[in-house]
Every structure is written in C-alpha cells, then in structure tokens.
Length: 221
Image (cartoon, rainbow, N blue to C red; front, side, top):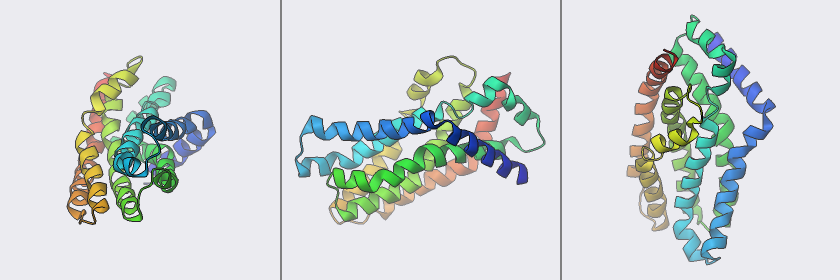
C-alpha cells in the first residue's frame, strides 16, 4: 500500500498546486445553482421543490470538469505508462486516482451544500437527506466517470464525448437521490433510496478499479 499512498499524496499535492483548475468545478457549481433562483423567481416553495434536483444536476456537471484531467497530465508527460509498468497493481493505482478526484473536485461541493441548502430554502430534513445522498452518490460519479476517462484518455477534445457517455449513465443515481430528498420533504422514510444508491456504490467499488485498469490498457494500445 505504500506506493499507492505515495501516489495519492503526489496527486493531491499536484492538484493543490493547480489552483485554477481546482476551483473550476466549485465556481461552476455555485454559478449554476445561483442562476436558477434568478430564472424561476425567489418563491420559497418553488425553490424547495426544484432545489434537490438543481444541486444534483450541478454536482454531476461539475464533476465532469474535474474528471477530464484525471489521467490527462500523467498521459501527456508519460508517467501514466510508467505507472502501468510498475509492480503496483493497476486497479489500486486507478483507485488512488479516483480518490484524488473525489477529494479535490467533489468534497468541496459537499462542504458548500449547507449554504446552498439555505439559499434554496430546503428544510432541515431535506438537507440531511441531500447530504446522505451526496456522501453515498458522489463517489459513484468518480468511479464510473473514471472508466469513461480511461477509455478517452488518448483522444483530443474528449470532454464532449465524456459528457455524452456519462450523463445518461448518471440518470438512475439522479432519480434515486432526488426521490430521497422529496421523501424527506414529505416526512416519509427514504432508506430504500439510500439503500439503492449504496448498492450501486458497492457494486462500482468492487468492479470499477478493474474496469478502469482494463480501459487504460486498451487506450494505450
């Protein structure tokens, strides 16, 4: 595990040195959410209805901005090839990369969620449900998204293709997440929705590192 931890530390250090790229998903996330009240009006009941969906759509789109650079720099400077030839299992390397993306691109969005929940007039019950769905669902964005990134790492302008591949895949997650928050708004249990999201996360956690490793090998050949 020592090489994996060293890789994780290296990627985190490089990410924080590239502050402009690090802030792009956060700024985009804030802009999307703040524009919606301007478009639909300041009515509290309307914002409460659309708020969870807006936050989740913004989180999905923001995560795509950070995903594109997941393997980009390592591919361009040749270090990705060295990582693939190292003795460290490639699935573990992929998992370290995914963890870096989640920590740098998505955790800041989760940290900002209390402020945005107030801005969109979400109730306390709705906010806790939203937070639970974000904690369970956003790692899924990174895991599944990394597979598509690995497949398109050698392509020029792969960002558009990445969005076309991933947005339809994330629709079930979006449905379960917003359904959980809606149930919380009506004071109904939402453990079933959380269980579905957790099941998807565990399934992705078990298979995605191997799929990412295979996709990297295919894209390098």
